[in-house]
Length: 301
Image (cartoon, rainbow, N blue to C red; front, side, top):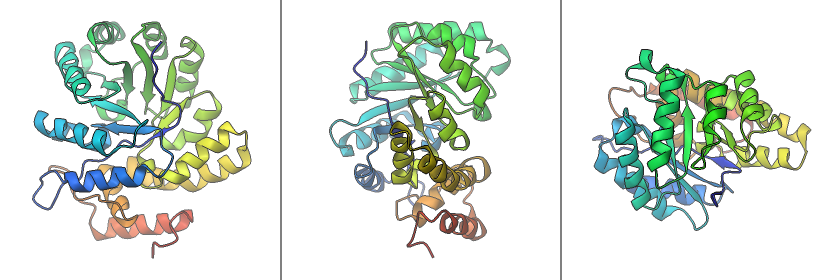
């Protein structure tokens, strides 16, 4: 068994860029320093909201190193792996391991999505896990990839000693519950969709990886702790406050909206990298209004 703490809330840390489109590593380190105070169990580097597909290999190395160095001891560092081949994924995991990451979050290959059958995914993840120096988390994000890992496939992979869990961002509550039911004991299901944050925890998810946790980390941790303490009235109330903001900065406005919300909340967000577009002032006004309505940001005007 791996000694890996995944029980709790992880923010998929965005990668800040300056006005010229260069990495803002100082801003990234500052964000992590603030997150260290929020009770988060760890950080996802190079996830979808980290614009991993917009980074060079050298930039990816700098991002993992910065997050690792800025995190307080005991935080679990999970490195996103966004490669199209099994060989490249293994190489990326080795680089992350050399930088001190604790686990790898491996996205489904998706360029040849029509060929990504369940058997192809089973073989890919088995090959990666067989050679990975780090514990592997599956990453199901069909809204970005067009590829779905079915619960039966996840359950089969859960028996691999080096595959420890999954981040499921699909937002399919029935499939997530089926995954929890089918997977072996000890396999950790992490919900990656804020719309089903609370019900997923009730159904047995071990924790969550949420974009909204980059903006409202304390509230997300508070909801998780309420569920673990069986304070479900409190948890439902928090979910109802968090969910509209989560919807806005994920499904509606995406990475650019998340970065704008972070700026409004006092974090370093910065612009997205081209070809993503900034949300503009109308988008910021919309975000401010939703943030005010949550009651979680008393300083937002």
